[in-house]
Image (cartoon, rainbow, N blue to C red):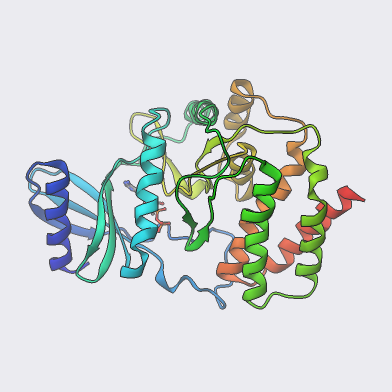
Length: 315
Ligand code: ADP
């Protein structure tokens, strides 16, 4: 972030909070989350050349803001992220950084939000809190699946056009979308054959199961939550929409980082249907296909393996 950018963003913050904010320091956040999960090793086919960079800017009173930067053409991505943070924050259920302002300055897109110290203790008790709070969040529902705006998962577009039938939504706007993207990225052959078959037959996983459209974080892996010094769980970097709450739960299990206490607390507050055991593979397939599209490499084998498991359940 150039000094000119930092000054311009500080001025925007000042206008947004209707109070003075005079830039004192700007520090890059090293080793930021970026959209690269721990399991992502092979970046040879990566299209993540435009990952976010993160900075903390501070005024002379020690007030801090967390600022994400990207190329100017990513402005709508940040606009949707800000809207997602607001959607979650307004429920007052789980702590979320309040978005402050976003836009384009000095040729870069930016999103400024409340800075939150995430150095709290990830104790058993705080995992229980997170489980209870996520269950409460999932009790917030909308009339339809989807959301009022599209957003992104990493840098991949996520289509949220509203729909009244969950399996249709999942087939068309989640798995089908990623599968088409994979074809576009050159992943043809077995992946597409298996994927097509799965899409055609996946209704079987929804027999007697009609989830309410729950408010979702949408990208809930361990890199997207933390604990504040007061022991409050904090979630950030969402890909918000309304859908089956099992999708959030499935993703918490994909890369680990959530303890047994979290799952027990969630189950106690909002028990899961027995079919979750199989559907979670169908739901995590979306994220693995997204990783394939972003990073390539071993995700191809993993996606095909998940498809084999699911197809094996059908026949
Ligand atoms: P990216 O979109 O590049 O993945 P994230 O939003 O995940 O970036 O943020 C990167 C890292 O910065 C997170 O893993 C977290 O540790 C930290 N972080 C994110 N948001 C805040 C915030 N509002 N305040 C303080 N630290 C934050």
